[in-house]
Image 1: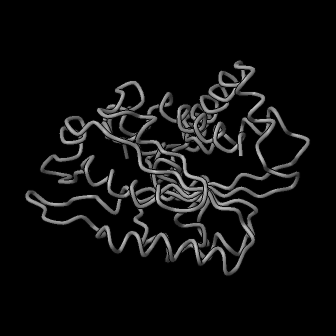
Image 2 (image 1 turned 90 degrees about the vertical axis):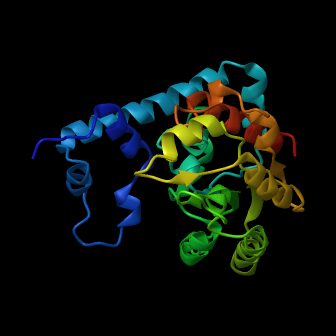
Length: 277
């Protein structure tokens, strides 16, 4: 059947949707199956995926042209053989996310250390949903868990929504529960990343259509950030990195997801923070 989704939107879907992760336990899952889900032949699917990987690698190379930044990468407190897991939503699940750029930074700069980076981002998930699959993170016994979620807890649905998916009180309980989940079963060091700021006008135009009826608000994201900033572990504050109002150069056309420049800003803030611990 002919592919009817406009090409840019199809690439957007592939960038943030990974059936191979969501349906990993299904016996029929394969690269061919993933391609077919998007209405593509496997060669076309591979080309699109490779473009995202190439952009993430180039972003890493561009960042490493800054000698001070390269020195911070060298000082990251990851030991040889460490396993680093990034837990989050679509901003982490993004095929050219901050975590994928971090993967290439370590591959380019510290390949001898054989550090493993695992992307445990799942687009659209709230902190409540993350609890349901978090066992899959702890059984891998990571040395580091970088937690970057909470924005979808604030997601609003419907024409006149009166509440988000998860209350701020429940979000706080979820965050503490996830931290304890890891502490009870691993010796992983923990790092928090706050939600970014967004451009509400663009978010409304892209997501609050009759077909979608979704919305996020900066005030709700700020409330999540306040909870995270109160934690005792290291925190990367993306509210200050993205600014208020948010820098348009750091966001995609939807006003919600970071652009490649935004993802570079996230990984820069992370590396600077951890490289100076």
